[in-house]
Every structure is written in structure tokens, then in C-alpha cells.
Length: 236
Image (cartoon, rainbow, N blue to C red; front, side, top):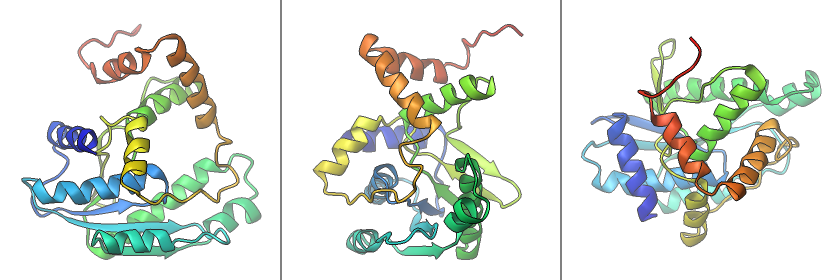
């Protein structure tokens, strides 16, 4: 966790993510990334120069037998208020709309529900658990399936909602998250979504893992490329 906190602190500083008085909702899916982010931000709260509030929110998509009690217990243990927003997103996406590619619509609906909840709570920022490996995968997804060179930004502003999205884990690597979850006994819930591990993102992840086996330094080189705004050369 020491490495993660160091990377988190650097990201917060580099991108000016957190200011004094911020009220931050952590979007909690129950997966390793969001759970580790919640714990890391709670630890960071203790020594952050900017004082901020934390609140955990899960958008329950309506899958049956999805037990959220481990998240309730963990939030209580680390003293973070927690709210579950019940929705019928799963029913709409899979049963009513019968989407052949459900991920885009599902993500859009989850974001909308989360943004509305943040406004209802009177908070001003959403912390998301995307890490550096996610950034690389997103870049390749955009290149291969949309023909554009782009990835998500560490800090974005949603003017319609007057909310900032922050991604404090942009310097954190996935293996560091996995290690921290195991070492600190952070609960992780298995996704109930039938598309879990059956997406284009998962295919790109496996492709990149094969590249890293051949080029061990490839991950770090790709991260350097993403961060190197002054050496970006394309045709136009």
C-alpha cells in the first residue's frame, strides 16, 4: 500500500485533483480497483494537506443474488458512509433492450445514476478506480475499434452537472492493486454481469499481456508515451 499511496499522492499533486473542502464520492463496483481506491483514499485522508470528505456509493444494477454486505461491513470498518442506489439497469439492458453489445448503454446508465446521486448528496467530485493499465487498454481500444489515439484523462469536468471526475490511480499498476487487496484483506466481489471477462477490453488486455511477455518494458514505455505530450508526432 505504500507504493500505491505514493503514486496516488503524486497523481493528486500533478493534476491538482483534490482541494480543501472537497466532498468526494468513490464509485464502488465491488471490484478490486474501486475497493482498493476507497481504502487508499481513506488512508490518504489522514495526511493529505487538503482536507476532504469521503462517501462510498454503489449503483446496484439489479442482478439477483448480488450480496453487497461485504462492502457495507468494510465501509463501516474504515468509517466511510456508504449508500446503495437500486436500479433496474440489468433488466433494461439485457431483458427489455436485449442489447447485443450491452456495455456502452450499461456504462452510460450507471454514470447517469452515479452523477445524480452525487448531486443529491451535495458532493462535488467522483473518484474512479481506473489505473494505468486501464489507461493503456483504453488507448488500444480507441485505436483498434474507433480509429483514434485517445485515453481517459486523470481529471475531467462535467459542466452540465458541475461535477469533477478524478482518477487518483492513474500512476498505479494493476499488479500493485492485486497485491494490496491480498495484503490488507480488502473484500472483492465477483461481478454478476454475464459479460464479465467477455468483452473487447478483456481481449485487448490479453493481447497486451502477450506483448509484455515479449517486451517486458513495454508497459512502462506505453505509459511514458501517454504522458509525453511534448513528443507526440502524427501525420497532421
